Length: 38
Image (tube, rainbow, N blue to C red; front, side):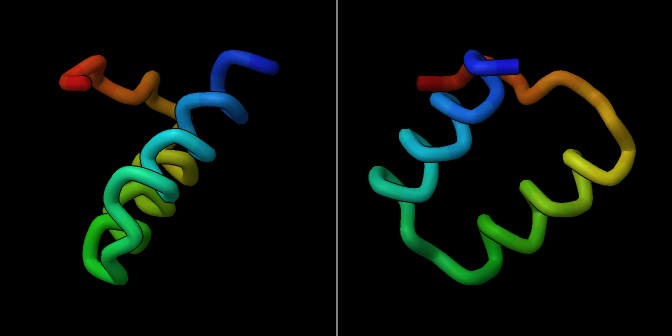
C-alpha cells in the first residue's frame, strides 16, 4: 500500500500533467499495478 502511495507521489512530482493524472486515475480504478517506467 505504501509503495503505491510513494509511486503516486513520485509521478505527481515528476510529471504534474493533467493527462498523466487522468491515466493514473484510470489505472487506479482498474486496480492494476502501475508499470515501473521511472
